Length: 313
Image 1 (spheres, rainbow, N blue to C red):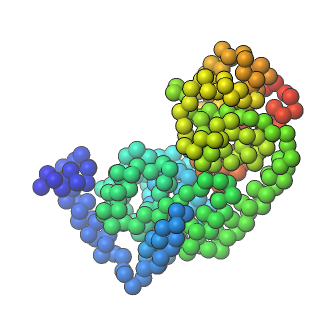
Image 2 (image 1 turned 180 degrees about the vertical axis):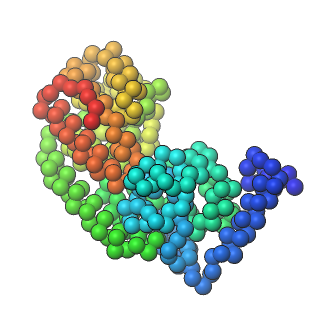
Image 3 (image 1 turned 30 degrees about the vertical axis):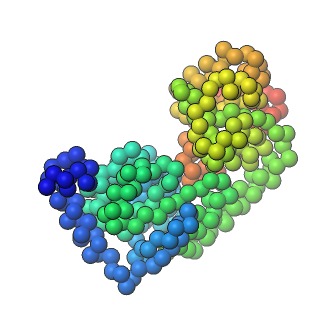
């Protein structure tokens, strides 16, 4: 009997393990095979789900925001911590965070499908979800240009195609306007710092790197494929960026930027181009990332004009 509890990794009682097992069986009984449909997720995988409307569990703040953008907010019955966009998402039941999910609670909500974010998922937890027989749809955006296609696919999943198509067109229009505005801007090299100790930045596959490109800037570590590589201070000095942009909570990024003043040989430090950027939408990979990118572009444009600055949005 104890092996059942270990299998589900609940860390709780035998009763909890048996309740989860029974809930799983009930979940399977509630999904009629005749009504199944097959959709393609952002990774190209085929996912079999019941016909809409669905009961959707979202495993990341970004996927929650994308589901709402696709017109499927009413179908989201569970999400994780920090899902705050749009405001309606704050009223949805929480089932944990990126590090630990309450699987018993998840199964008790009888989801038809789980929408996960591959770059942020816990592989062990998603494997357990798969073993429970719950379909997993992976939503993944590598570039801002991928947002509209991802929204459309979520519309296919949730049966909200028209709403998703309208949202996708709006995203494309806004993105096109940003690219037109900054396409011919003088390029600047940028260190985008996302953590202090150890020092973390972004690589070429992180959408924030694409946001820099749209703003007419170049990610100074854009040759790295890891989405969030750890780097050495010496590597930053060797690459000598024109700007250092610290993204995070204001009280944290102020300290990070202050630390760079110990290296006056850096162009960014000499010019006073140390930017604190605390709009967390830039890191959440949902439609709100466009708003944050527009604000980021405006800050970079000020630096391009030669202004000495250190501020947040």
